[in-house]
Amino acid sequence: MFFNDEFSLLRVVIVGTLAYLSLVLLLRVSGKRTLSKMNAFDLVVTVAIGSTLATVLLSKDVALAEGVVAFTLLIGLQYVITWLSVRSRRVENLIKAEPSLLYFNGRFLHEALKGERVTEAEVRAAVRSQGSSEMESVAAVVLETDGSLTVLRNQDDQVFTSLKGIKHPAL
Image (cartoon, rainbow, N blue to C red):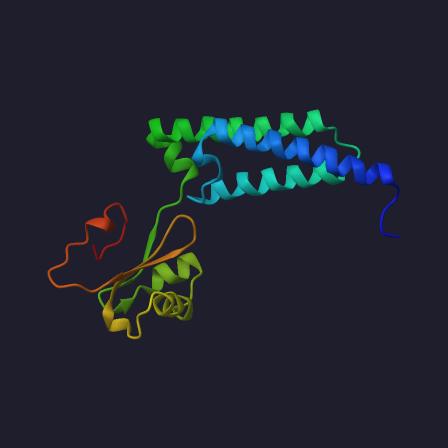
């Protein structure tokens, strides 16, 4: 069977449109940070919002109003936590991961690689994706708080000011 009845299809169209519009409105009110990919906390909120939208769309047991309340709760909690993290170092340290230096000055930092569960091959792949053909052209590779790898190229007389705040004995 392709569908249960015409009403179920109409319900998905109506509830889906209203849920989508409600979500867009809430996201516009809450600001750009709500769906950012700055850290694991932001990712969890984004996935939870998507899961909530899918549940509202496809489950007859969840009313549109309940879905909108769930959106409001998730976005409101995200707003409060990020507001607090900007104002409190303790809250910031609780929800944010630290970036990790994985490669520096021509050598892989094996303890950091092991601790972050990243392989040398993954670091080399990131270097290649940035257009570098030789590891010698790379000054540093950083695992960022959002899980991405940043590749910094060697330059003459460079000072590593962008690495401030990254804890590593090499710095």
